[in-house]
Length: 201
Ligand code: ADP
Image (cartoon, rainbow, N blue to C red; front, side, top):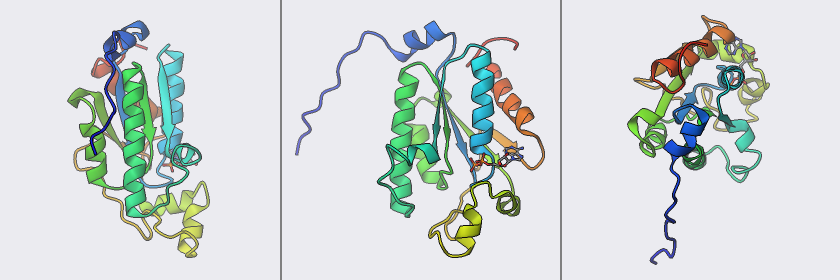
C-alpha cells in the first residue's frame, strides 16, 4: 500500500541549528561488551563537552530500553530493531544540531553499518569501547554476567550471543589500559581534530 506520508519542507537545516551552538553535529556511536565502559565514558565525555559549552544528547541503550525500546527483547531480530530505532533517533538529534552520543552494545557489524549509512560519511564516528571479556566479567557493574552465567539471562552478549568487534572504528578506546578521564579526553581531542568542536580547551 502506498504511504500517505510526505516530508515537510523546513526552512532551517541541521547546519543552521548547529551554527548557533558553535559545533558540527555528529553521532558518536560507542559499541562494546557490557561492562566495557560505554556509559561511564559517555557520561564523562558529556560532562566535559558541557563544561566547554557544547550541546549534546546521550542516548544510553539501557535507558532507551526503559522507554522507546521497552517492547524489545534481546533476540537477534529485536537487537536489530533496537539499533534501527536508536540510529533514527540519533539522526533526529543530528538534525537538531547536537552531538549525539549513543552508548549501546550494538553487537552486530551489519547493524552498526546501517546506522552509519543513515547519515553523512563525516557525521558518524564509531568508537570501540574495548575491554577483554574476562575483565568485563570481573567488573560486572550490573551483576548481569553473574546472572547470564547462571543461565538466568538468555542471549547475553559475550556469553550466549556473539559480539562482533569493529574492524576499522574511527576511535579505539582501551579501558583496560587507560582511566575514564584520559579516554574521555581522547574522544574530545578527536572531536577537535575533526573540527566538530573548536580550538583548545
Ligand atoms: P557499559 O556501559 O559498557 O555496559 P559501564 O560504563 O556501565 O559499562 O560499566 C563499566 C564499569 O567499569 C564501571 O563500573 C566503571 O566504573 C568501570 N571502569 C573501570 N575502569 C574503567 C575505564 N577505564 N573506563 C570505563 N569504565 C571503567
